[in-house]
Length: 114
Length: 110
Image 1 (cartoon, one colour):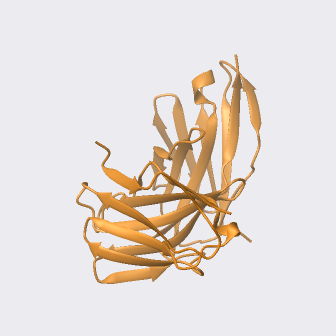
Image 2 (cartoon, helix red, strand yellow):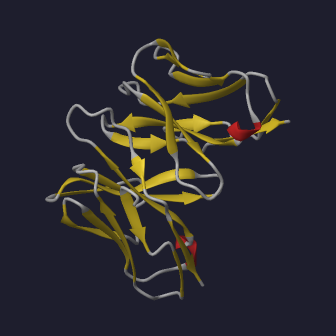
């Protein structure tokens, strides 16, 4: 089983719908991240959390919200989806403290907003 | 200016050649850099990380960091068709958020 699991892997929805992408991890890492990937734009940071009580905005947080339900779970919500939120979304984790900073990625969630 | 910049490519090299991938960054406080490889439709995977000025070698891969010039590179020796992928450079911003470049697509011709 993957260490970082994202659900759903693929989702097609309509404009205005609420969508939640879920991420769970078994690596025991404190830090969790949500990134978005668009062709030619690389990975852009949406939100990150360094522990259960810590939530921070990234480069492109507008239109998104997150919830850190537990150390192992970090969810991304689109309250009212719009077509330009069509993208590939990655959850990632990393060690805190003296860790290398290496990110461990989930397999991605492909979201299409019609 | 993006915090981490890469040429999008594609960079095309023949099998067996050296592929050179480059990255510049704007945050002078950045102390560490990462190179990730991403195959089409897959998640990124770490290839190398480097903290110190100079070169770091791991098998066919060499990462180079020049903090004075704010420049990071990845050399792939004896390139193989299986190395064809997008290579993402990443560095910390504000000390801890990992920010990625847009990636360079590498094509290794058999």
